[in-house]
Every structure is written in structure tokens, then in C-alpha cells.
Image (cartoon, rainbow over all chains, first blue to last red; front, side, top):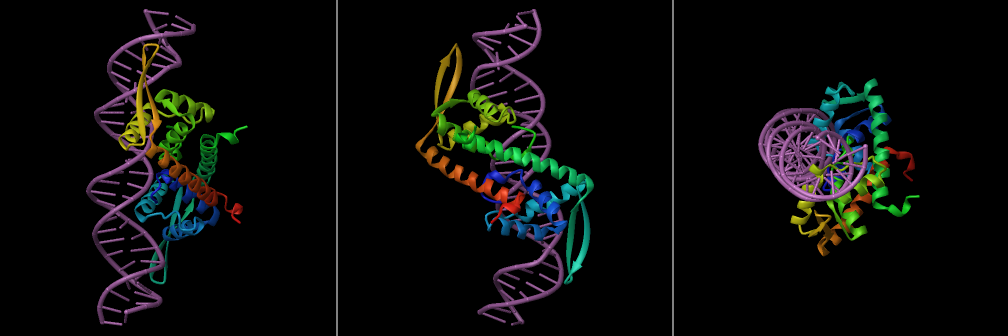
Length: 111
Length: 111
DNA sequence: TTGTTATGTATAAGAAACTTATGTATGTTT
DNA sequence: AAACATACATAAGTTTCTTATACATAACAA
């Protein structure tokens, strides 16, 4: 994903949140979207993305739908019902994580 | 560290920040401090902590000082000069990371 | 027309950071 | 006497990533 180790473990949450927001997306689209939102700071590599998508699918959190656009294959992913529930949990975990990290890093804001 | 994968990659930053703040700390003390600050949500395991401390030391970011208290060994760690510089960088990376994750998860706050 | 960039998916080898389990040792509480 | 807290350590295995490579089409530039 990037030089900073901090992003480790956050890829699944990012994917699921984007799918929750956009209904369905294909892999390449996800990489571009993430790059745009983070102003180029976070670049998801294919070697990380595709195995992650396949695992989320295998876990029953994503459904696939193949389309051909301009003679090129696209695999659109969307959340299953189970995936939607899981997304809620993971976003909640992310909020807790961010809160905890801020407590650790900026203890003066604890009150 | 914990069930949530999100904390992966953040341990070094946490350690260095706590050392920056407290001058010197020993391993067990770090685990207890983190548990207290996060209200029990984040539990650093020994299997993660000690190898991390040894690596930071090997990288020249930490110095060690052994003391015996109540007949028990304590290895106090503190930041080297190099470690202090690195801590500034890592905290900056953490701020960027948190900002990017919030942009991804809460796009309505982008403006 | 030929090379480079962009679009699009995929996997394999290796590195890094963790979990889980185990080990050693002392002090304190039940 | 047993359990828990303090204190450090490592080894085996898992997960998640990086890096490299591979295939294929379209668009653009030299």
C-alpha cells in the first residue's frame, strides 16, 4: 500500500467502506478512488488489493459480477448482506482505533 | 496486541511516543500504561512487545539500562538522539494516516 | 510503427508484524 | 498451596503486506 506501516490491517476496512458508499466497484476503480481521496498519499498495490478482494469474497462478504467494457474485463464487487453487517462492525472498530491512537499520541486531549 | 487487525503496524509508534513523553520506561510498564490509556481496549502482548523493543534498540533508536527493583530485573528503555528524530517523523506519519483514514471513512467531513 | 502509459486482473516469493504458546523467575495475595 | 501479578524472553505459525512478474486491450506519443 505505502511506505508507512500504519496502513497494515486497514485495507479490508477501506474496501468495505467504499463499497458500502458506492454500491459496486471494481478493483482498479478502488485504487483510483483511494488515491484521489488521499490526494495521492495512499496507493493500494495490486498485489495487496486482489488477494484481499478474493478473501473477502471467499468469506462471504462480497459478491462478484463480471462485465465487459470497451473489450476489457471488469469484476464488480458489492457487499453481501453479511458483508454489510460486517462493515458496520469494522467501521466501529476503526472509530475505536482512531480514538485510542489519539489518546495515546495526544494525551492532553483526554478529559 | 488485540483482536482488531487495525493496530498492526502501530506498535513502534506507540512505544516511541510513550518514551518521548515519559523519558524512560520498561516493557511491562509500557503494557500497563497502554492498557490504562485505552481503558483496557488495547493489550500489548509480550510476544509483540519484546521483539519490537529489541528491534528498535538494534536500529539505534533506543538505549537500555538495566536495574534491579525488589529483586526483579527491569530493562529501562529511552530514546536515543536518532530515536527522538525518528519519533517526530513517525508521529507526523500517524497524523497523516489518521487524517487519511477519516477522509476515507467520513467523506462528508472533507471540505 | 513502435514504444510508453493507462486500464484491468492475477499470482508467486519473500518480508514484516503480529498471535499463540511456552519458559524462566520472583513477589504478593487468597 | 495455589493463583495472580510482576518481569523478561523466544520459537512456531499466521496474516498481511511488498515486490516482481504475467497477460491483455486501448490510447497516445515519438
